[in-house]
Length: 111
Image (cartoon, rainbow, N blue to C red; front, side):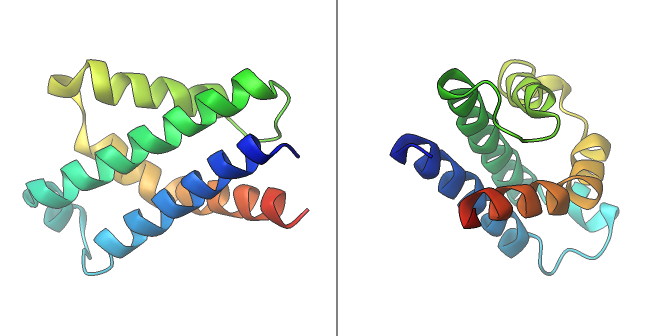
């Protein structure tokens, strides 16, 4: 794996950990939705993840990250349609998809 690829994978890993740190005391969607600071911090980390994957795809378009294109599209949606970001979707991503991405990135870094 090229050094640039490793850098982007570490960036993704760091952003995932930041999201986990930011939301450690958030126990419900209502808590998340009512906390603008946490929502914005999570959105920013998702932007970083999406950008890192976008750059990875430019280096290696066969990088084995499930739904890589969808993650980049999420980044674009959060950045360009900031006024339409749906907290329900972000909350679902945090609870359905983030752990899987974390495992994939960890596996890539350990291979």
